[in-house]
Image (tube, rainbow over all chains, first blue to last red; front, side):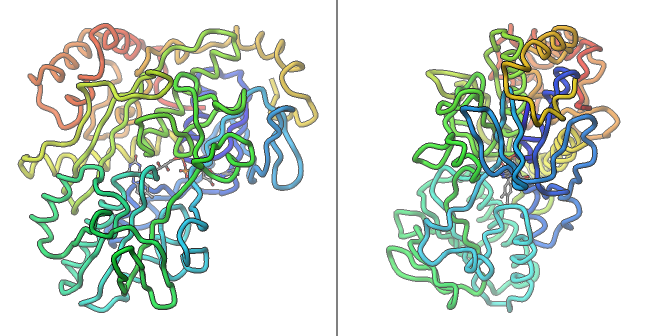
Length: 388
Length: 111
Ligand SMILES: Cc1cc2nc3c(=O)[nH]c(=O)nc-3n(C[C@H](O)[C@H](O)[C@H](O)COP(=O)(O)OP(=O)(O)OC[C@H]3O[C@@H](n4cnc5c(N)ncnc54)[C@H](O)[C@@H]3O)c2cc1C
């Protein structure tokens, strides 16, 4: 078994495969020596947390074979994965979990060079600290602009959690400043909860511009930090551009991504709809209502591992049932969540009706405090399950 | 088995018989997890972690079923478990609880 990508999806899957069967030889291909987790990154950005708390080294993987390199190509017919150093390894079944790539071709003006000036901070790497430092250097009275892409993208509530925590930072350190969210959609995850909290905690500080009011950014100019929309242009002191995304590059070269850029999968086995014996889990996969979250990635990875283990034993894989819970911090000690339960239906992962939903709109502060504490505990538990 | 070092072996046909023999001998309790059961461990970790989210270690199946019923009916107040419990039928809940209660279920991942 080869697993490509050691994020929440890939590392969980490698571990679950090994736990399902000790004698199964599992190899994890991942170029980094440590994983920089995204959940709670927004707290790092707002100066509420250090980046060390996000860092997990790949040294607790027992007898899972770790290959510290990048996979560059897949030969689906011969069932082999080509590695960056030119070697290639054969597989019985391959799990691809490369996460997302940012689409630097989708927004005129926004390329890798522009990202050094208008950071996205949407993947692992130095971008979070760059954005944090830009916020810290901004004078009081500055304008921060955050642009959010259309669906689907990594972490649907993420931009709004980020806006909340930046607002918290501005309110406490630079109270004359303003935050504008330019959004390519008219509705977003946990919207009513976020909006109610913004009104209560950050009155007048956050302005949300939806698609219908000209929120969609069509072009950027990094030289002047300008974001152009269909209705006019906005100049920022600090610009956080979250561009459209697609499945990580290896998914394209393996032929498991379709014209949308994402990887359609069978909801029972997570096997690609386009290539046999290749399974896709986590943010790269698309197959219905499950949002792209670390929680989903972990749950999908465990279900996929169970199906793969059944398939190699030539057994019928069981119908899975999956859960997602996604917490957002609106302020320190103020958390809200969305949850969902999913199962295969009509070839997709569909939400189980009557279950799930968001935290109550009207709730005492004690509930928000509890959810913030649960968010931290969830992060600690899941990262210890996934990274040891 | 050392498939990890199998760079020069070719794919499935050569491997399958060895693999299948090894597999039959070593299926773990994880393999029988009821649908949905493995999702629980993302939040409910080992007791040693000292989380505010309680560990499920050492709970009896009847107890887990009763708690899930109370979450579902709203009798037990919750932040998220009420929303999750409603996604599982009585039968599914029972199967999950019985798996979680097995001491050999070896829920917490250690490769
Ligand atoms: C700001 C922010 C906040 C978030 N907050 C939350 C939250 O509170 N809760 C939540 O559940 N989710 C949250 N998320 C979403 C979560 O981070 C992702 O859904 C999750 O990381 C997806 O996991 P993954 O394993 O699919 O991808 P990733 O975590 O991106 O992992 C992919 C891995 O694959 C490796 N890789 C890529 N290509 C190759 C290759 N060719 N060869 C080898 N290795 C490769 C990469 O190095 C990486 O380690 C947040 C995201 C962001 C950006």
